[in-house]
Length: 607
Image (cartoon, rainbow, N blue to C red; front, side):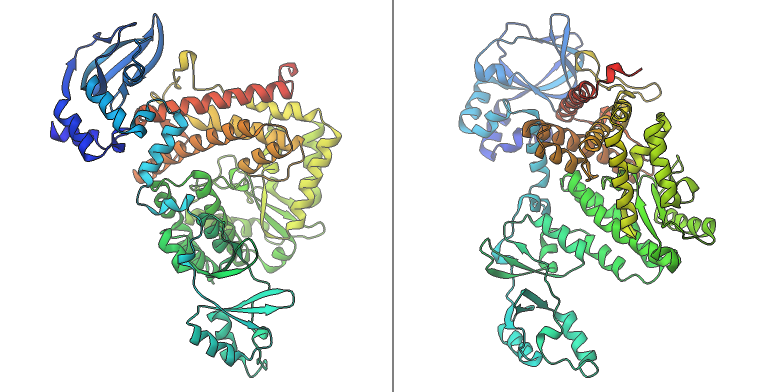
């Protein structure tokens, strides 16, 4: 009994109770057994207990209609007891049941003493997911997701004028026990750190370095004190900096945030990976750093960090990785006359784990790359070694279709729009989601502008383009029950069943409204900004996207840990009742969005 009660204490809403209230349960609750087909609560009957399932399955039915299914760690009967109203459903055991029965007197007494516990039974599914996430995050550095900069973590800096002698600035810095020097210039601050002072020591004579402005980094990268700590981490990772000046809303300097202090809040390997990537002089170092990313992802996910924030951090690291590979593998003439672009989920900055490679090269017109097959194959082999599987659709630079001149890509775009078919429209979607990561970015920018121009001149293409959202059915059937594919019992393909429709629907709207952003979250926010959808609708879609990606990532990490091949299937048996409920709500949101897109683009009129 004690061991079973210890298990109870680890699940919501019982985690909200203190020791005294848990002891109330311990002294009054009993364990009960019910065989199949037992009716625990009849329709129009007031329960006498709160039920908590230890083992077995139970269904809630309204006449012949299945309303819900309950299994281990689920509770039922709470709302009826609190409202003192008979049940509108009949609760029937479908698999022999073992459960706790907490007497109504005890349950109601606890509700009166703990309002948070009581409120749980009336909370929305999203609110319950937030409670669950908060429980996982308790005491972990994932609290940083909602933490803003605290002045207690800031370090002092010495502020000097631009023409202060370097030695004098050093003496002041030592006297102030500061971590950096801020330089006041007529056009804003500069900063001097250990790196700048090292340059002074090594080159002071040959460069005649005398005053502090000669060695400063200017202009500075800075932030305001209202920033979330996670956003700060993204900024420092993106710019590879260790010292970040912080100002208040009135532009008053508050102090320096050092990376080492930031990492004390948020312990992961992002900085180590970034430093290793930035300093890489050979492919082995890049490969070594790239292999660390999965460990970082697992650590962040286990601490409850939202998948879209993990994706942002991974995307910044990947940009650095591809930039290094571009400079180390491709000939210098290629680097001056081409741009490397990431496509698909990588181009949207939404690929978290290493699923597959999607990349393209765009060459400037008139440039003739030498040894193209050999060079591109070497590039792909490095990605193989880091752990990126090759794209099954061959959407990689080793395919001449995705490695050619600017003008040849323009011809493709024209063909996609003028003579659409399913394959061409898929190529168009893949390229529309692309993002340049190295080389001459203007080549890519001009092609994206050309896509918008072509679509604006041939708006009928949008209906054909958007129609792909109807390619896959929802895994949510009638009566809100999950339907699974043959050969995948108790599993659903979350990419086909939900993620694709949401991403492609948003992509289609972004193409129509000339939204240049590729990230789905940013596209949704942009659609809200231009008035296409309300703030509430945008928030619902964002929440659905987060739920889908979170559950997908969790399943993929589990398969990675067990050495299984990663795919997009989610095991329904591994989900709790709460997770299933929130997944159902997310799938309903996707279906509602699909209908909206279908109506908007008149998809019913396309044959």
